[in-house]
Length: 299
Length: 320
Image 1: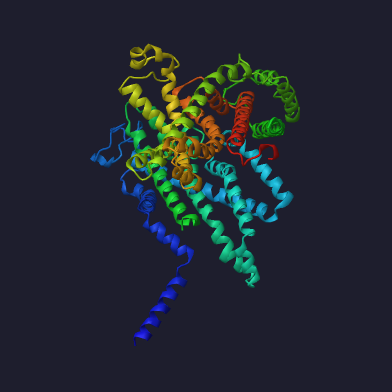
Image 2: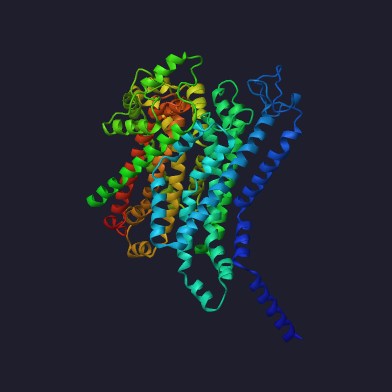
């Protein structure tokens, strides 16, 4: 009887060990990181607010309250975040801005991710001369103040929101390409790939079981830093008056308008600035948590 | 090493050429021109204006003209500042931007490096947590938020520093007259340097922690080398590497950050001219500034690479 129980325990332990893939380990480590979990919670909250909050207010984005211009946050008339200098409700403006800022952050990152992964993986796989020229090109682009190119692009081809995110995405792929290339090259030469080939695993299985899980960690970590970077780039452009245009709004637009009224109506700057900073905090916490969770060095 | 520097400078020439060409054709690719904003120009006046700036010629011809001028060191006439040449605008703007950018860069590297090292040496203490929390804040609060906040606190409320002028002023200048000439630069430099301090302190901390775990540091300690010598002799040089290699991107960040900071504090630097030029499609002005900025970034990257070679014996710059 005890022998049987011991055998069963051993079997259970074996099954558990088999079920603990590196991903499970990483997920467990991530869940144990309170700052990272708080970051995820904060982002979920911000996203939900961006989707639903404008609908909670009785005001529309283009309602001009002539009797309540530049009032501080108040519960009266449900101007929870106050109003701006034209009497528009800041609650609605801020959360509509959140929609634009978060969307731009994600979309630009997808553009940069696609270009960077394809470019980097191609260079890494082909190697040799092609790789050298492809990466030399990246080096040349790295040396340029690329934000100026975004500014030139945007001033010339019109201040269009789609252009803004295309321009940002087309500029921010360089680091991604370098990371992916480095990963591809180093994994290609690893002993465990050779072992997998020797043991007769198919190429598809090797890519799925070994290459992607090992290459994707730094990419995921970099994505969590790229989204907030791109949100900042958009805010920067909008701040200069080159990004999102009225009637659309973004945190950068609101911060820019708030900065002009900082002596008379500081909440116009503070509210979008606090939300932007909170978003940055959340992404940074998540990024740090993921880095710790996925970094094989600390296992 | 001189060989390497020369080769790098040679590579910079096609890079600059690429920049000039790309920005030139980008600016001329879209419909419209610099005089769109001026409503109701007489057709003949418009024609004369375009002829004066050679805008009526075909684009390739304009390009050839422009290249020829650049080789003679002439960036051409500005269009929005109609009585000035781009070269003279850059000559007035560059010193302001340089002062601003270099101070921010030096402050960021020194304070960031110092904070990071201290945090690493006191790892997992309150000092460490305080430094890392402020670094997180520095990263989360961009300069275009920090600048108005600084203005509100130190300029408007406390009246310590002058706002949006290059004239010394504020109560700080009156209290310590020797400081007065610096006062207009304090807030712009802080706004520009803070995000970089944050990033650099994180890098320096991570690098120092990594070095502290190395065997040679343990050996040094076991031999009885005093703590200060271990830090100065072993950890600092190794921890400086990632900081130095990050200085390249920092230069680019400071240059782009200067655009916003100069706009907010209304300093007559290159960044403000750039924004004005871009908004009004002043081709020669924008191109000239892009070229100068790109040159600054390229030269700084070269200096950083050379410095890296000096610090890290593993990197042989001669073969790179």
